[in-house]
Length: 549
Image (cartoon, rainbow, N blue to C red; front, side, top):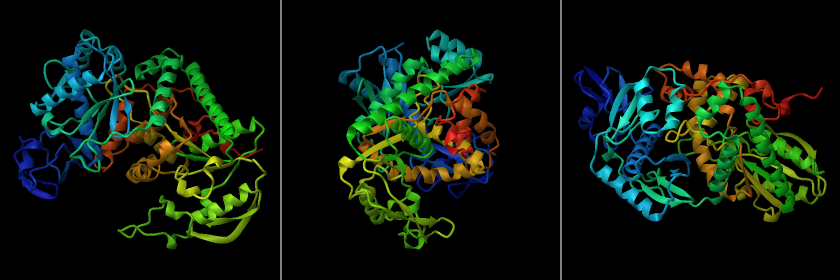
């Protein structure tokens, strides 16, 4: 049969695997990690099927990077099992271009990290095959019970399917991951391992130059926020999805929701206190898509009102430049998320005058025509009255360049997900945010999931360029993730994601979300969710969007 791989017609036999075809490509399939076939991701070990088009996945692709990360993680776990057999290993969360890992029963030292790194190098250099083994769920449960992996054993109890896929590098460790692996260890030869806080950081290849490990970036504020989230999980006594599922089954989720919301409320009050103590008057809020910025701004405003302050909001939407005056990208398109789309000079002039107690005439922007209208409205603030600005560029000093630093207080908000499926399979913050975006777009904007998925890559690029580089400039960080939210979001997102067809270019992404949602029980307790909860911004019923009676 014939098929097209990377646009090249190739003749192949029915028994061949995708990896067998790579040497028929002009570049020999350099950097190949997997195959994408009509929106689905295949392993290089999968048998070739007759499709019109297929493409090699490399580290340049999002899905290719996930295959690399998954395989690198498995190499680390195999090395840890060789050097510390029977010891618990937790893949906690992402950190810049890496993974933060800890060994709860081992004091991590430089010497331990060096030995682990050397063992990983030996596994990579041996170019060992990674085998995929199909077993029954009962056999998988038996294996995890014998090896003391109780986190795996518990989560399997909530899995519906009768069979299970395990991966094996050598006979010392079998493990599972919800996604494809590279076919061998030799392809995963760029990484680094270093101590970080009480654990270690497993660093991926640098996205800008995959020939070298990503450089270490010290982000103490972000690391502290993750630590705070871990403390919240300890307070909530919820470390993984099995803990959350148990609460749902045993009808204990309602109290859990109340405590979770109370922890967030306390943090908002702390940030209000920080702002007041700083003596600042301009409050700048920024964060990536689906962080809950709008609801957070409302709740922070209320916390400030409790102290007798009367915050007012300045909308950046009023300060857009006419579309035809915005610099174009090399391909002729307009990046509407660039800071150059805003009339910064006018904004700074108005903020200076407002802080002096003067009245300004705020412009009005017409989004349909893409131009500023002739209409304006008068705006003035009282001495000391807080001014809140919420927007993508809030932490970028260019936005408020002429405002003295002591008058500005910056807040970074993001849902930093710390709830994982189990010790070795984490739920990505990015995926949790995407679920929020899918539900909100569908609920309130009439946007089908595939359209949201289609925009997501562009949204992510904007975040990488305009938000994440400035997060450490924040005076305070707020983790908007709610540990109980996934069982609620599943009710809305799961049917929509399952409706994405295999021939969709977004099928792989949709299936990836479905795979981890399969492990999560649905909860029908929405009447317990407060009307001012950040989650209400996505599922509806938020008090801040109601009309006054």
